Length: 260
Image (cartoon, rainbow, N blue to C red; front, side, top):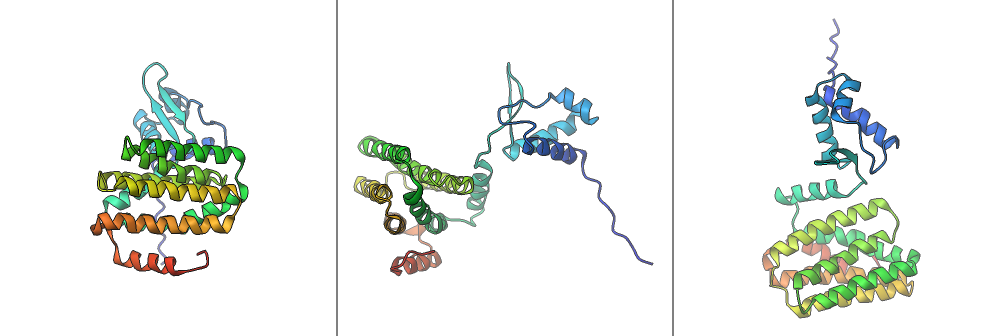
């Protein structure tokens, strides 16, 4: 006699979460809107307060809502952010599945293409914003190497925004956040001022190519910049070198044509 598989009834909190998520995705509740109170949700779903709180906690972990305390207490719909992606990358780093070399490598597969695209679709406002970030980095070099590196890193995040592609923006933002956190923890005062100035100068060259709408040149300079960045950091911290990644990066460095 044929045996049937059991059908698992979903947890009530999962169903509450699913319906709330569907309402947010459908635009019934937009970013900034306040969701019904816990009491209202309990009454509407006819479930316990614990069930509602579990559902709201899951939505908060997904970055779909933020929970406020105080006078305007309640659950509010959030603008989408790259934080869940960033957290996943950080989890991989904590689990020793991703290292510094891996972060440079994934940037090599993405950021030169971002620079190429930016050269095609940038606006004058984009150029102004990117230039201002580099101005800030240069001002910080003599005062704070950390602030100079952070301003320099924001250049990459802003460059991604030029593409007007939310997926590219989120991915680049998440990788850059994880990368900066790792660099700030590892590097401290090991990188000399001249090396930081060289990184800023590379960004100036990328920006010049973008301003001139020279897409292939922007790609090539961005690629060279990331390769130089990897070997610059390896020179002051040999322990971060990854043999497998180094071989792949050396292969990319030897290619004359832009890597796709």
